[in-house]
Length: 227
Image (cartoon, rainbow, N blue to C red; front, top):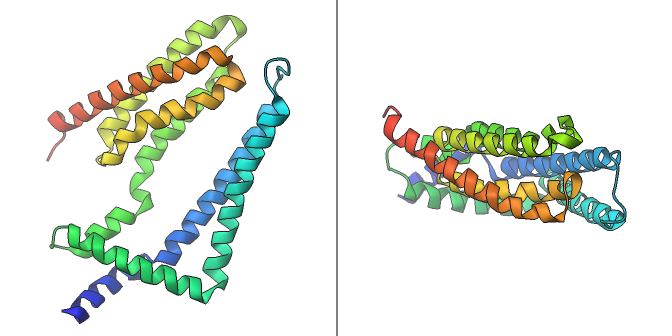
């Protein structure tokens, strides 16, 4: 039995390993850090209201967050490539996690079930919706003039509702129910770029609207999807 269990866990490790996943995570952290710095550089080219906001403080916080992400990513890559002890620890921990995850899956075809669970490519639909939502929050307002504020907000609200419906419809994972909270959180930094502090309350609107859209999309998926 033990040999059989080890062979099955090793099969899961042929395509995926703890070190491989950590290397991917490290690259993602570095990519996020670079994206944050690039976004900061773009934001700094826009007119700044130094009377209302402490621009140096906000810039410092932004750079600190990006630096932390960059440090985590670089450290992870170095440890995964240079430290044999660290790699052995990760592989051992990954194997234990794999065995626990496999026990919770249906006994039929354990290898494919676990690979589907950890494969990041399976989430491309969710990431596409999230990127579209970020574009609505941070790029779309650039096309609106000073007199188009109400129309712009209305279009963003409509787009948020539609994107939430899409998220609820295309995603089969329970983690999608965290999407409304993520949307609400991602909106807050845009308040300090395009609006004023009173617009923070809009994050509650986006939470409610995206949650309603998510439920609508999930209902469509439940009643009309082909089984």
